[in-house]
Length: 287
Image 1 (cartoon, rainbow, N blue to C red):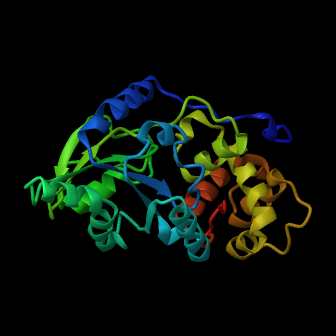
Image 2 (image 1 turned 180 degrees about the vertical axis):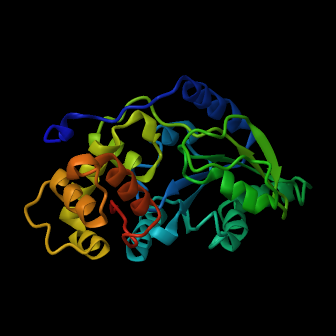
């Protein structure tokens, strides 16, 4: 357990290299880009390669899963994106919260395109937007909500959407779906951790016990009360991640033969509860 800090998270399936090519090739077909990020980790869940690829295309950021993020932190991120001439909207794509702001935001962000179309006698020409985002940030849920159907596949696991599809979502707006893509290397180990904490990286390619220990170390420094209150602990001052995990396992009665703590079961439960917002509304990074 003591060596858990040595492991780094890396994940770049072959289909994701293809996705980068698809995004580059599809840019000429669209008027703007919708990027869906996780509101808990807007920096870590944004693909840094997109800036260079998208260039001057209007860009709308959807801060998804805002229901499990800290609302004050989300407000800071909205201001940050605004300062970079991007439109940002907090949403929860599964419930539809905030999505009523999407179409008005598109019309605002693409106002110059609309004016240009009108001047050319093409009033009402469809506005085409490419939807991008790393795996498991909610692209399929967003498209299903906007299109009012279930044609885009949805899953809780990373890397499900694979095929390019167009969706008409009303008000003359069409969305181009793209597979989720991660960049080839996480230069900052903390970025890899945050992606794994939130489920953007498949649990199958990480050590769930190691991951849970790292998560507890992060929360122990930033939100210790969230851990203490959720798991009814007295204190976690000065404890390492594996020691906190052990306390949680003992408190929940997750034991195996001989009275040993079932670390694997405890780790899975912890990650599930964090991702589901049961430890509270937590944002892991600020602008």
